[in-house]
Length: 263
Ligand SMILES: [Zn+2]
Image (cartoon, rainbow, N blue to C red; front, side, top):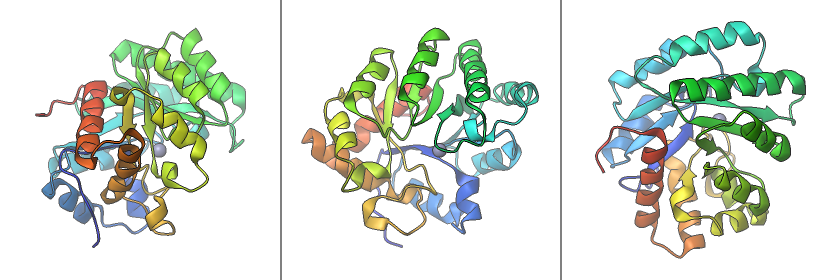
């Protein structure tokens, strides 16, 4: 298995059960990543189901951390889903709320319902003092407006795919920006431009596995073992070494999610 793992790196956004469904041996991948020195991996919720199944991985991988939340496109019954998430957020292994946000690409859930659900997640994030993991697809303006009007306190814009204009606005609100494998695609100049102008201590990296394999592995199923590709890209943009970039993005991740890990 070809994998370059930088010691003390962090994958801030993966979906372990979705990887399983695509045939990835998650145990094997995570074992290799952690043996090679990766510091942490975040498993992000897409809905309120399968929470126990996700958390079962914790006993084998203490450096795996979790979020609880409902993806905007998985919104079906706001009250019921929020009640369930609220209970999940009380678990000590849960360090974030999400992924939540707005997705105007898949218009399966009406915009009004998505906005209502997003607002409820923002409230939970404040109640539990946990950062938000924000999904934003074709909704820059609306996501920004809701974060402001609901007075969101902290979080990350995951898989950032917009321009510097909006990146700066999110950073000014106190948010981190996380970059995924799509930053390595040839046509992603706008995303690279945005990343290159951000403060180094506000940047996270993620695989969003099993989705968005970086250029080098396009066509293959993505997993945390491919995070080095995104780290290399950020390192080039900042004229830094890959090890230093891996470490800084881990520190940023640790700071945002208040991970109880050694530096
Ligand atoms: Zn995701």
